Image (cartoon, rainbow, N blue to C red):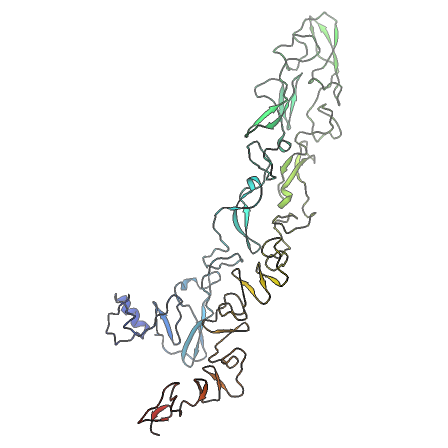
Length: 511
């Protein structure tokens, strides 16, 4: 409880005096001081101003009639002109400063492209996690402002599937083999060497394919290592996968045999052909005339270079990948032969070839989600895609509202009559009445006197809600001359009693 360090008969009337009193360590007792409290709203009836919770006279002295000045009531004056915050305007009428009108104070931040809370940051939101409704790694998200609405954006983008027991490409399947197959060969084993995305193998050795093992991790399936440590069998094949054929076997000089140093099963397939070798000095020489498999590349189209029975089966060709330099659904790519020897990632959907749909996805790959759909006003997609308003409802700022109402902070209100949102959201009449979307003082407005739409005619003025001729005042439902009416002398309700029963020029006495 505040206490005043002065006699209770002293009124708190001058701002400078109040400031000096408080600076001196004094406090104010509201129960003994006549100054009314202005509270958190910081509003006072003219000509008083709010200072430290009390309504006091303005120490700046009289003002010039017709002039106006900027004003800010309450704390936070330094926020004026920051973000949405704005100073109000105080007009001078009859030498007295009026109320501070149209001041815009900080409000809670909403997704509207405006710094509502005046902290110099636009549309900031918490980093709390949210569920995107997508599959796998894309399910976890964070709230972001997009198209005037708060949406849940994935914190992890879709990427090519790997063997990790996670749905990396967000398609609802975990470690699906068709997306992650890749050639493989046991490490540290002679016979195959990786190059250009595939393995080049000698002799009977062959690469296998990578598959995801249960519970994560990868395993190499189908690889063929060397059949023996030496090539001592004279069979025309390279059993130890060292690039030489039957170099360790004994033979008769001049003997000849068919030979083939490629993997088993590839001779006679595609471009591969066997050759011949001749025995000299007890050992077979080089294999002459053979064609072994080579790594399949994009540089030799329409040919089976690796002799597996398939033309242009370049390693990785057709596998899923993430395309760069594009956005939206076009990020989903496929490895294809373009101008390079090795496949490059190309979008499955070419940007601009697919129309945008209202589905929370960037379908046309222009970097914007659901562009072209007005989620703030579209009755078929109000607030979110697919939410349709009822037959008698309209979409207002993302909310389905009955006809004649608009959405203010997610609540449908009649701005034609709501005094807190008169004509537009957030426009408060400050205790007045909202008449058809405009603020009116029914006690004094000549166009809305006593009730909305009732105008005073001719030379009448509106006083206390009544249309009265000039010189009269509305008192108790009737227009009276307070200069001569003994029951309302000088002011409504002032009754002249004996012995001064007459009202003379607004004062009780004998005329």
